[in-house]
Image (cartoon, rainbow over all chains, first blue to last red; front, top):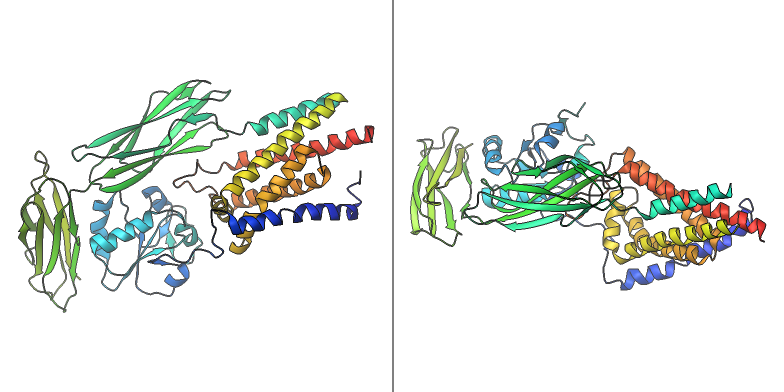
Amino acid sequence: MPRLSNLRVWVRPVAVLLLLPVLPALAASLFHPVSVSWSPAKLAPGEVTLEDVLKWENILWVDARSQTSFDAGHVSGAMRLTETEWEAGLPPLLDVWQPDQKIVVYCASISCQSSHKVAKRIRNEVGLPEVYVLKRGWEVLKQGMVSLEGADIP
Amino acid sequence: MKLFWTTLAVFVLAYTATSQAQLVWEQKHLSFKAKVDEPTLAGVYRFTNRGDYPVTIGEIKSSCGCTTTELSKRDYAPGETGEIKAVFTVGNLSGLQRKEITVHTDDPRAGKVNLKLEVDIPGLLQITPRFVFWKTGKSSRERKVMIDVTHDQPIHITEVTSTSSRITAELKTIEAGKKYEVWVKPENVDSLGKATISIKTDYPEDVPKTYKVYAAIK
Amino acid sequence: MKLKKSAVFVLRIGIGALFLYAGVIKAWSPDDFLKDVLSYQLLPYSVAVMTVWYLPYLEILCGLSLMLGRQLKESLLVLAGLMAVFLMAIAISWARDLDITCGCFGGSGEANYPWLIFRDLLIGMGLFLIWRMDALADRNHP
């Protein structure tokens, strides 16, 4: 039995073991009923990246998360609007909003849906123009590229 | 020495093989369709402790104040069955609501358990848009707000009022009980102003709902 | 001596089956597996996709090798390397405070980091035990 210290003897069998799965892997990538896209999902309509937003000037941030999350940290001056507290949150938002301001809605992460739902309602029901959703939401915002405030923000 | 290694081996195997949570849930997702006159609805999440150790349920948090939970007791011995009752208050919500209930337990393998509650609340009527605005110094032409009754029974608009005398709202009936229009017009757009337009209906009979549309001169 | 041989056998079958099962689950739903890999935010997208297609079959192959007792040393080494990588990924995610199982519709709860690390260490120990006990058995019965 080859000792661990005698590495050269191991290289070939381990390489074979590592290379063998390549065949089924290749076959799977071609024939598997479930498909996986080879490039990351493009932006959905109405979505923007933080990179895009940083170039804009007149922005009204809308936080679509819970009060607890909001209190812990949110974009400075952001308004909070959620589907559950829609009627309560709408008037303050409308008071603050100025024509020509772009609204950017965000929630916790890339996978949460609340920002999309809130943005959709603002566009369709409220009728405001220029409403966008920040892709990745708080996960990218917490890195501090925009001014933040809240209990957890130093 | 051999015995030590063997017992250790068996222990390792047994422990890694049983990496399933102890609390087994009958249903983690509940879905309801709310009836029009139902102010609340309730769902039950049943679970059984299929592990070898007792489990204690700690904090139960729901993602919104509209969902409250009830639990009869905290500790469950192996084999015991329990349930968490979730009560959802419809309030002013409409459309599809998805709420989460996070259950903290001392089960080391499950961590926090996420239960989902989905409630579809049919809307009574649709008001578009909910907000109209004018820019100072620009056009002051009237704006139209459309009201469509989506409920299967007719709903009548009884009164339309505005909180500001500078911004008036006039009701126009297109089809009684089904389709209405509210025309909102500012007296002038020389200075800033805002108003809340209240749209009173006759449904439900005992507590008729009032809807709000917002107007502003910015 | 017999006790040790049966202990090795039980461990091989058990841990081998674990990897086999894990590999099959991943091979079955590459889209779910991709979401998991991306949530660690460690690999660039294209590398993540390649991993998603390749890793399950490596796990299946090594799991089978363990269960059949063939190419044991090699598969133990590869699996040990895999476990080391998994442990590092989990530790890094914990340090970066990532939620590696999105609680949104589907996941069964937040990632319980201490448990995940403990479980992976246990599996690692199991692999180590197979190696040591098999080596001892070899020495006594070349």
